[in-house]
Amino acid sequence: MQYTRLKNGHEIPLIGFGTYKIDDPVQAVHTFRQALSAGYRLLDTAAFYNNEQYIGQALSQSGLKRKDIFLSSKVWNNQHGYDDTLNAFDVSLHKLGTDYLDLYLIHWPAEKNLETWQALETLYKEGRAKSIGVSNFQIADLEELIQQGDISPMVNQVEYHPLCQQKELKAYCDRHGIKLQAYSPLMRGEALKPPLVGKLADQYNKTPAQIVLRWIIQNDVIPLPKAANASRMKENLDVFDFELSAQDIQALSSLAS
Image (cartoon, rainbow, N blue to C red; front, side, top):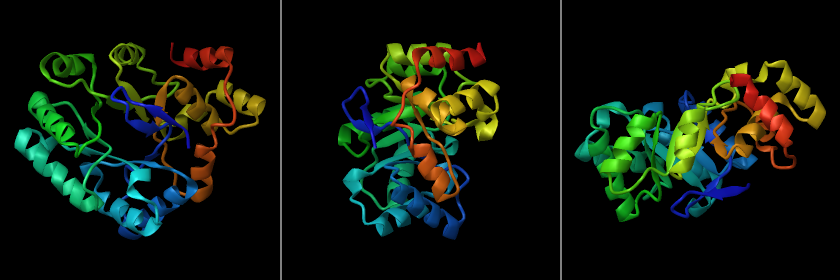
């Protein structure tokens, strides 16, 4: 696994495993154990996903050390506000079977963004959340936190792939040292359909999914792909033995222009 650093110096894997809609008690534990076995070291979950407890079980069964796993979760919309967010964080820790998170995010912007963010700042200052950030925040939402909060977000998790590049938002985040994470990086397969993606897959002897994930990584964004079986999990991780040329990066970037 390769890593990058957030602006606070905390190391984060360059690719993670997305867990949305993986919430069947038996299948979820099996899937998360498979992901860890395949080599994923970043697991991204949320209170809303209703699977934190299964990730906790998979971790306890994996034999891996907690310090070697990057755990990320999110506070849901009905838990916003200072005290409610602190309580929600404690519930997530209990379900995950850990005493800290590597990253804690506000899942969606809402009226109490600032109060909720102040709770995340407290968790960060206490060391119980090693890094803090947001998800689905646009520029105006980020501006509020940057201007009125004590700590600037370290991560913004949004939909990002060649067909949804959010260029203005990414440029803003780049200027402020906010690392983008990409959920739905393959767009449920839609991002693999442009002929250019298939052409590049043939050219580099890689799969279309590997081309898209590599494009995301080379744009300094952390993809969080999902996969249901071990072979696809390993395929999505196998993106560190090649690089797309600048010309091919630009060609893929033109898909959304």
